[in-house]
Image (cartoon, rainbow, N blue to C red; front, top):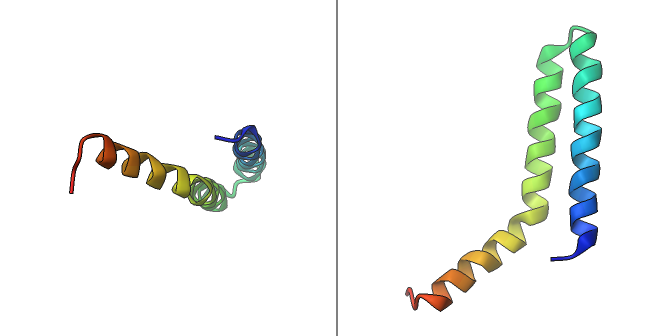
Length: 65
C-alpha cells in the first residue's frame, strides 16, 4: 500500500470534516449529510482495488474456488 493513498484518504477526511462543520453551523444539515456520504463513497472507490486484492489473497491462501 502506497503512503500516497494514505495521505489522499486523510486529505479527504479533513476536507469532509471541515465542510461538514461549516454546513452544520449554517443550518444545512441535509447538505452536511450529503457531503459526508459523498466523501465516504469517494474513499471507498479509492480503496476498492486494495479490497479486491485482499479478497483474492484470502481466496488463494485458503484455496477457495
